Amino acid sequence: MAKYCCYGIGPSQPFDTEWYQVYFPFFRLETFNLRLSPLRERGDDLELLARGLLDQYSALMGKAIHDFAPRAMEIFKQYPFPGNVRELKNAVERVYSTAVRGNNQAEYVSRNFS
Image 1 (tube, helix red, strand yellow):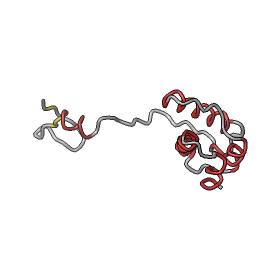
Image 2 (cartoon, helix red, strand yellow):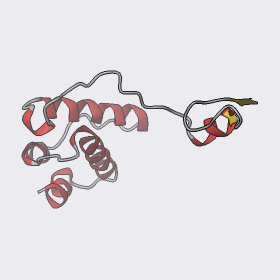
Image 3 (tube, one colour):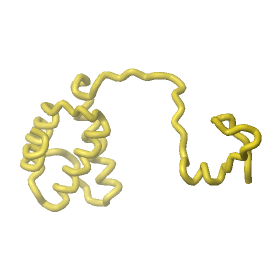
Image 4 (cartoon, one colour):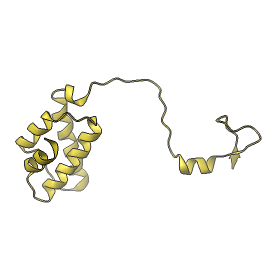
């Protein structure tokens, strides 16, 4: 199936949509900009997001870990999270994995996020 496209390909050059869908399966469109303050400036949002992510991992992985160790959450609150929510998500997943293996959450977080 060949179609034509205006992105540098003229009418004399067919555009293979099947190839394009294999190598570029999704598009990012900038419809509008949404400005959010960094995670480090959102106060209690960090705690709510972290607990929500922990609940997601608990449901997904099948091992219920309902909360963070108090010291682990304190360290999270002090960490600037330059990667914002994506970094928090990865951090919570690592803490979840650590807790599932029976290791101390606070010790792991203090080693990796202070």
